Image 1 (tube, rainbow, N blue to C red):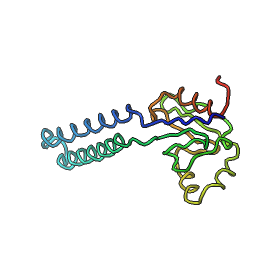
Image 2 (spheres, rainbow, N blue to C red):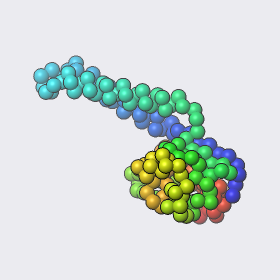
Image 3 (cartoon, rainbow, N blue to C red):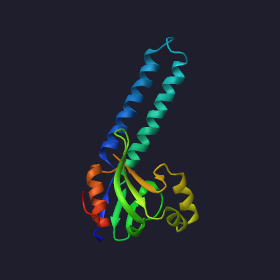
Image 4 (cartoon, rainbow, N blue to C red):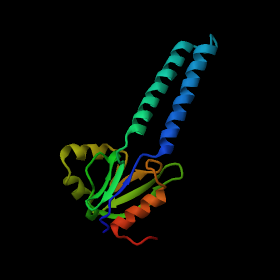
Length: 168
């Protein structure tokens, strides 16, 4: 097992896509308010909702962009991914790492050796949060493609290096 610490941060592409979505919604909202007139039923409401949604998305994206903390950390203690909302997963609890999912939504998946034992070792609040998390499907913990500032294959290779698994 490699004890070297490696940090990954939020993907810039994810931030750019969020800003683009916010701009498109703002343009739709302004266009509806300024030009729809009577052709769109409740044009003022539709335009206002689009503008509010645009502002909310922009706020979340900018807050995420300003966050300089690591989104995933690999070190001697294990693997920690912020979106799992639990502490680090010890390397001894991980059986294998591989890619899964589809072209539309690919993941790096970590297969747990003993999922029930792992869950039993978590504090109650973390256990409940993990069971409700879309990134946990027993026996796998998943890391979505595009969430980190590195390509999926590089993330997988780094995890496998820490696991001590030979590269395929």
